[in-house]
Image 1 (cartoon, rainbow, N blue to C red):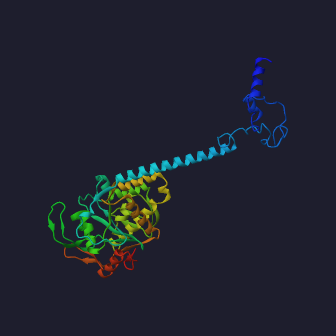
Image 2 (cartoon, rainbow, N blue to C red):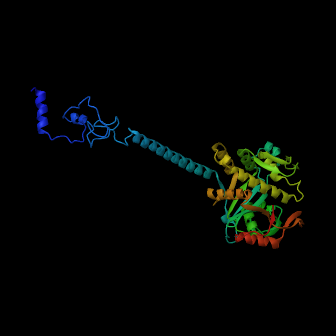
Image 3 (cartoon, rainbow, N blue to C red):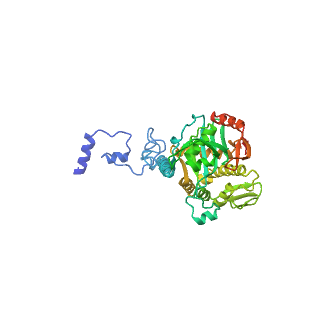
Length: 408
């Protein structure tokens, strides 16, 4: 024998036989008998259909030598698809988390926490539920002279409250109670913010409190006259109101009758229509067409704010980042709140306002005894019906079902 044959024979005689489960091809690779070409593979066994072989014969189907799950065979393709779906889902979750966290800190940085309720004196005890004092001021901050003329705001340098509402949320639903700015109430003793002098208690219209001592004195005056503990404060001026409505793309309002008021610039026909920022400001400020003037304006304000909140929370706004971010930015840039107001608190206030429109709450005004009460020094004012008002205030303090108040 030649050298090659001797080597082969020596390995064959000295090495242990290969395990029977190895195919002839693997045996050949290991130095054994080379594969026998041309032998027909019988189904169900090894060469010649011998039992115990792999399905399809010793060689098996073309892919039988691949291990399932490695990405080669059909099983591998299924595993690979699941893996891709899993990684895609994980990536989306990570992106959503990053965007959500970034949005939260961006929005939180824009909140103007300027009102310190800890400075309010002689506060009533905390009641049940949560009470938000929502104020619309006539601040012209941010408006140019041309805009003041266009919006019919005038150029007054002072700052007063145009509207005041207590929004109560609790286990008995949501109640939005308006307080007429001309309410004749006791302004308790206070220390002037500019003069630092002590002023004795006096009786004036409610919006005088804001002029004399800002949000803190207004809060104290409302707490003093109602006994309701104010948990949070939120205020928006003319410019912020207009920008918020325009960022939202306008607010859809349905009017029962035409509305015209030269003083505010309101000029609307009856029926449903979309109001832009300028028109919306005219709508909530008008009062001269209403027989009860200030009370009529409060009805419009409550209706508008509830509608605005409902529209801002719609899927068309929330799911559209090109609309959502400008709305958030415009609202928070000009919204002044108390120092302890968090974004979740703001969201709760917003959803409570939305709930009033959706039937989850009610809009009322404080019970009125005389809407044209003649005062010694302040002209005509609004005088509360204190018997009914006290019942209402107690119900709100104790988070009970509201049974009094004029529904609007």
